[in-house]
Length: 212
Image (cartoon, rainbow, N blue to C red; front, side, top):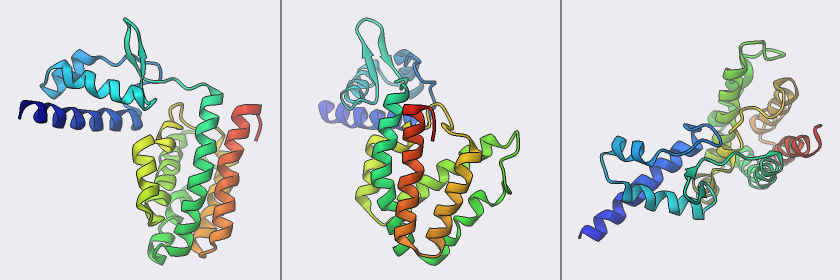
């Protein structure tokens, strides 16, 4: 029974650490304090190590010999690759959301960017970042596909791409977000799909070439 209990604890800790990684609880490149984690959970370091080794195998944590475990700090090319993957599965999610989500749920997207007017005023960048995250996570949730939700919950493609905050200026992305929202609200799946793919690939190109 002790082996089973250890496995259960390791899985629980794995999920908690992964959630913290995806939520950005630790700065990119920071060392994960295993002793502090063990103390906060009230357990030994063994399940902490089990969880971190599993996350390392999944590419979500970096292991450095003798130095411990670290939160990845993605360079521009690595971030661009996340946006490549996102463009594929989030564009499909946007289409499904536009075509199959309930009308009330689709119209709820209108409130996300309505508060910003024509531009995002200075001091509103944090609110815009929160709206950006909610927009993309809601589209995945409302697509009606458990597999799409599973991809994000397992790999955090969207969550991890926010590790340095906004990549492009709100003045560039606000019109793109609104165009996608408009397509979703009117139920135009093809326009929503193309708009989302273009939106995310523009960020990819910006990261790789320094321009959208």
